Length: 388
Image (cartoon, rainbow, N blue to C red; front, side, top):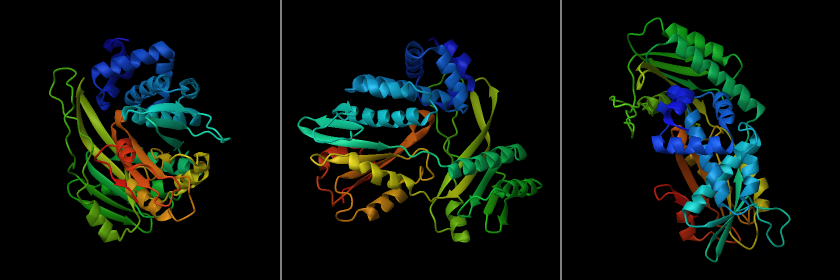
């Protein structure tokens, strides 16, 4: 697949991937050869976000990983199911974990049948004579998650239509998002839009706090490759200088994470200028991934170290790995999870513009300990490792 064809399919999405032109061409050519052009077009339409191209690059990488692991045909069959299905998304999480293991120098088996075990771990990695089993957990969205995400979409889209520039921060303070919260927030933004010449704030009792600043607050990040020879500035991610001040003012005690909408205009074919930034800060309350890990850890062997990998991308904790790390650390007690040598938290989609955030929490009470040198190979040196 040549570059002109890729431009015709993905258009402005090209601006939002960090992959180089060579990486994009290689990935799309691989997908066209293995799955066909119709699959690329249909999947791009189903993703329907500016990260579609980045996710296609990521997916091509997953298919290559399946070819590199022992027993990878089973993994590839899961990847070949509908991209939006739970089976395919879970296989992507497994593939991205296997990719890191391969990069660390391990040989990797997918769903091996181990002696004396009726259940199979997802991955089994070998570093010479040392072996570690991995069970990958990819929490699915609950019905409540779907409803709340729909509320978030309504707020982001409608507020983006009302305001044309500036920085809007919305802090949701209720523990659950009531059905009419979106309408209340949108009505408040309409009121704020009556005066866009100064900083304004509004408090919706027991629901939300809004702060609007007609100025932009952003961090400018230059793109690694200039596709067209034009001067280019990529404005992502954003800074929020008022966050801690507002937290103190509202006495927000629960951790929060943010969802950000960046509205951009494209005066030229290759130039993006941000005009409006909207952030929705949400309370974090999501214990279900650890609950799933509790169920899955029984599939780990007793004779070798076992690690439960939690892919946090679709959970409300996705931007707060430190909070989950503390929750998990506090959950480790003698005799409770003897097969779980460690929990590896992973969150992010680098190809879609979100860097990996990772934490490794070692269980000091596990029957079989995870070797320290292997623990340090699993995640980048800059990521925290809690050795218990």
